[in-house]
Length: 297
Image (spheres, rainbow, N blue to C red):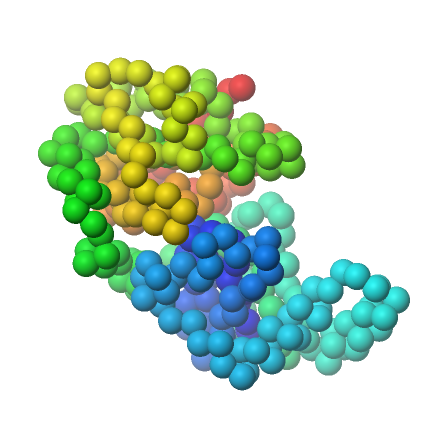
């Protein structure tokens, strides 16, 4: 049995669920499990709220979760280690994704015993042959979109719209900044905007961010519009808005990735930072055709 662990925010949950769908195609016993660890909760199981994907906290899922947290237990090693070793011997273990984020087809092979798959799975190659199914699963419900956001959609649809997603917030924390936050500098976004102007006639840039003050201070132009209306558990509506834009300037995160990927415009231009993590290049993380820019600091 393969058990795909769902955790972190909406973008991560979408990558993990797409990976689950591909695994399930190869093994009908595949399940998904939502991790309730406090550091992983964010806005909870957003797949249900946003896309109607149900999560049933059934007895078997409760049992699997108990096994999972036992395998992942880091305290009192002298007590837990022998028991974890025993579980591993009978084929019950955690399979962690390699930290290079590149596609590994071995992860899609059927699993013996009980394997808990823990990772981001941020490559289109993990679901390349079921793209249509993934597009269908990740459709936004227009009935959940309020009039204020619908007015923004109207503005987006009536221009050569380009989304600019700037993620700061938690990326500015010391540990996150060293790994992720330093990638998308001011220079990167200015270069991406300049590149877009050379490719798109009369672009209109719509900015989406969790640091409105920084964006307001650094980006001022008649063709810039800052969207600052969706917060906390309504932040998914920014993804909905971004996916309606014609073109995209992305940050190095799964929220940006999926917002651009869900755009069905066959002629879309998607600009991304070449390095998803500081000084690390992952060849499989972006779909073919997306434009990778060096993110200078």
